[in-house]
Image (tube, rainbow, N blue to C red; front, top):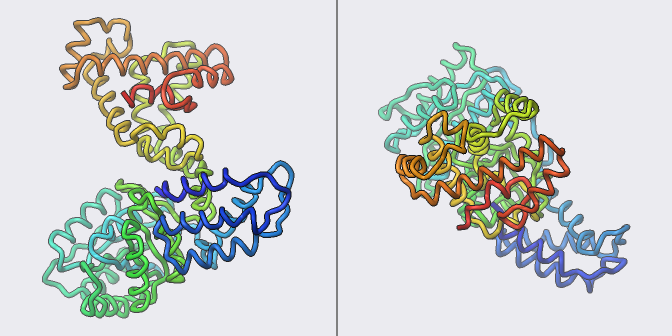
Length: 468
């Protein structure tokens, strides 16, 4: 996500030479590169012009404080302007949505077909149910797309929320009104209404969704837009904004868009705040949009807070505590423990999801590695451990040639793949011994010296074999 923009801005910062003041001359080339980086990232031209003008106005003449370089000082200005570009005029509610109404608070979802609208309804339902303890009901008013109603029923079940059944022979307004009545009588806090999409904007679709809006009077009307559409994402959001009183934007497939232009453009062009971003295909792959943290991510500072939140949400604390107690007692780190570590990483979305939230220097260290290939390797490692007996997992020293052939055949891979996995396990085992006997300082030195991706501390042992 946002790789192109982050890479370009990082290179630009390094080119500025040390001077005591940011001047027109020492920023001219950098501002030109920022402009090109934004255009390259598919940011709308009017937004680029305004952004660069504001950065120039605020930066030129500014003193370079302390040990900062002019490049670092300019990054501070760029960061402030990025936040200003993406931030809402009003701070977002704790739930990400304005639900201050007589229950049920009605949220209407609009968007083109294929933008990820139905999936976003399921993700939002899970977000409200799990994080904010809301009783949520979902309903589909899409009577045109085959299996649209069934799709929403399935994602609602995944989210653990209630679903109001509708049929293709009903009228969308009738479905919506019936769902409102059901939600009211069954004491639901929130009703999420999924509407029909089209492959392109047309008058019939706009008239239909406007009729549903008028009938149910939602407190939130959110437009779901595909970030991978680039400039088209902004244009469609603008068109919907003219037809409906939108209150916010849900930006989907942000994880699949290396350019990131839609994130920067959509708020400025439509005047509507980005409320949520879809960060993965999983049912919990939704984040409340935070302009400050997003700006940090764009500038390569990472989003460690998001990483912590992801860990808190995904990691099994009881298993982690059990592992810590085992290591503290001096017991040996075995393949069962290694499998547990792999499972924890998978539950956090895999290496590609983790990398996106790390600062730029860590991402640069991993540049040579294919993250999707790394995630596949992790799944294969788990398959290899599953092919072992419990005794072999607890006592890896038992794994001689004949056992290795049996395990590799059971997992459907070559013996060399098993040997690579065991080598990575041994590296992890060495790290754990360092932790037991010498504390964190020794551990970090050990990790820095291991094979893998340019000494990527903390992940080098796991990643050592992925580029082979």
